[in-house]
Image (cartoon, rainbow, N blue to C red; front, top):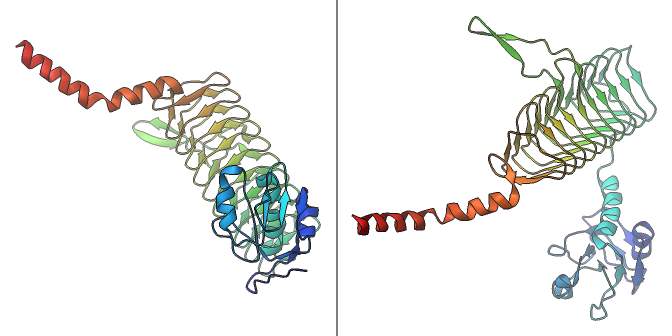
Amino acid sequence: MVVIRCPEMSIQYTLNQVQSIIGGKIIGDGNTVVTDVASLEAAKEGCITFIKDDSLIPQAMKSTASAIVVHREIQTLKKPQIVAENPFLAFTRFTGVVAEERYKRPAGIHPTAIISKEAIIGKGVSIGAYVVIDDYVCIGNNVTIYPNAFIGKESRIGDDSVIYANVSIRENVIIGKRAIIHCNSVIGDDGFGYLQVKGKHKKIPQIGTAEIGDDVEIGAMVTICRAALDKTIIGNGVKIDNHSHIAHNVTIGDNTMLIAYAKIAGSAKIGKNVMVAEDVGITDHVTIGDNCIIGGGSNVYKSLEPGSVVWGSPAKPINEEKRIQVLIRKLPEMYSAIRKFIKTSS
């Protein structure tokens, strides 16, 4: 048996054990022991890594990794391999197991946690230091709440969800099952609603709620506002990147993805399977149809039909915006030509 140890790492699996997790076919010594996971660029002895296609074979040949997950058998690669139809997907199955080992959740309820007697706490729950859980909160089974989180009155958190440190979940908010909310995010804060009365801004009470579906992941420093009335709704399977803002009464359909710094204004309706790239702004009350793609840095001022692919400010069909960008780059040349023409004509 080939054993390659990396003392500073905590994992130790044989290639046979890795294969039992990720599937595929082993080429070489199945008893090879790996003690870490890494990218192809960073992999050293003891590591298992992966390549996606033939373009990376030359780099794999130079790698000192102990084993590589590959898309096909590479006979010239003189080291153990696991052949998988989708190497990246297979590799992530193993990194998921590694993550569970490395980042084991804290056990039990910390003595400094403040939990209302009226709260309902499920089985297998982990609650960290200085967490505050208010009256009539309902926490599902196997939920993990990290230190300094606040869960407001009458809120509900579904089974197997993870709430990281310093998250604030305001009153009457519903969080679905298997949700992940990263550090410092705020769910259910007041929407930004005011009326101008005699030159002054009068606050509109925000008495609605926010409802987060199942299998939603919310990044760090995200704000999702409660509705003025009714609900702000985040559908099942939605993924929201760091520093994004979802205003009051917004609806986001299932499996939509928002990349960092997305800004969705009040009462906008986002369909299913929409891709919103980084630093996009969507104005209030517009409707974005299912399966739309919005390019980075765009500003959307009008509703989009399902399947639209747009870019720019204001957002327009992507091919139109590309033509405009080409013309913009030619403006100095065009300006010089026009000046020359004016001089010769005068």
